[in-house]
Image 1 (cartoon, rainbow over the protein chains, first blue to last red):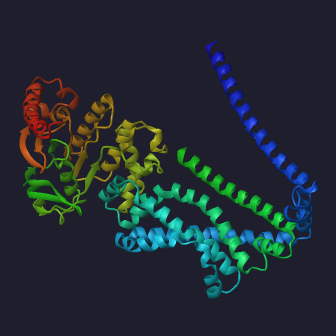
Image 2: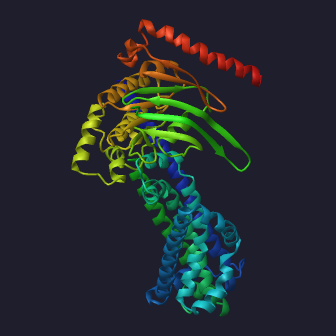
Image 3: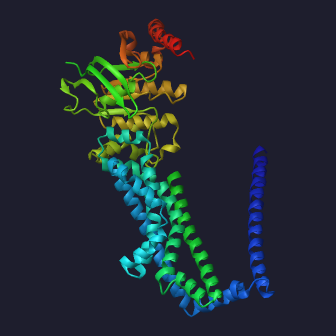
Length: 269
Length: 263
């Protein structure tokens, strides 16, 4: 009898949670629909200048047409690949730099002011220098995507390395561990959650770097399409590119989030 | 010959702003297989002594000998147990226990078997593949004990390993650790705040004074208490008298401090 009462209470609780979730989802959908409908109506009734703001139907039609004939797919693929490489490169180099800084206290003390300056510096401003040094091609663009996240990754990960509980190191030292062993056995695994969370930040940063890079030099990619659309005053094309960027940036973020969740589940199991 | 000798050992901690003298002219000797407890006020350099023996810190002045050899030349292995277990949360219990052999490259099927046997011996059954966070505080500290045992240490350094545990677990673990150390004929130094713990586990007690840390008095535990298990020592007729004697000395110091600081 008691069991069934508890079950009923639990069922009620589950229903309540479900109802709340449904409500949130409904409101989210309503906002989305209102936005699209408002945009479409505004554009048709000329409350918004259709030349500048285009309209959902026009954007969708253009996107479908360009995706089917493959032109947009090509630009999308270029930008995606550049972003993924820039993102991985930025994160990897950042972690490697943090490791080098950790390996020597003196080195990290020396590097400190330079890291502060580099971190404060708006990295996209380095664009022209990359283009001159590396040529106006995809290498410069990828470097833009990477450089934007390297320094912040270095700082965040190095801080995480430094904040690992001293006692874990004591334990390893009493077993005669070398500094390298201390790093691989304690410092790195203990900081892994931080590294995963920098991935989430870096995904967003890399998109910024790549799009700005494409603004500056590219003759392909979504950043190029935006600049091209702007120059020929085809704002439907600009909007379509923006929509694609929003979708894929969100997808990439979700993938990283999924990896984080899987990792945390494994760590907790 | 004495197993461990501290000869006029002093240690300073330096920082940019100032320095503190943690211990001053600490002198004591220890026989092989002896169990010594160090008690005294917080910050009297108890843990510094352990850290120097573990060679995590090098003393500023004085000499330390192990079996007549300077400590740096000796091949001592320490089994350090801290206030918390400091098991690595991303490793299973078995992997945590095997970290010592892994570090010094002696990991083999034999050590894995030994780890399993030792885990059984301390009462940890079916936990090899579990992660530390799935175990209670007492079980984790048992695993930490096995982690030090498997390295076959020459000396156990116990830095308040029972202080974070609840009372029942603490008493059980005192018994377990004391009997393991006796069985394997190890020497041990226990740092603690708990006078009854010190009396019930050790052969001798060093009472320290703080700032800078010096040895104020050394108590020898009567042999009747030494052979008794920690849990039963507390009920032994000789226990109370010794407790009171030590208490007098500890309290004497405490009252002075209260007068000085006036808080």
